[in-house]
Image (cartoon, rainbow, N blue to C red; front, side, top):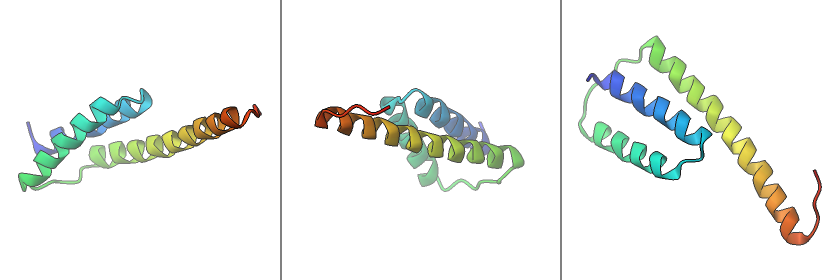
Length: 84
């Protein structure tokens, strides 16, 4: 497996884990990236990798927004005020 394929797999896995709020998988993928980074392998930024990187960025933005809504609702619930 090439470095690019490994990174591509991690990016795809991260997107999937974020969509399912799978913390265990995210931690596993983080460890995989640490090992890959420590290997010192060179990386060629292909168009496919850049596209996956952009998909991950959009997913992170959406996840942050969704978590903000959940946090807001949780704080409203704790204060006894439910506003939808």
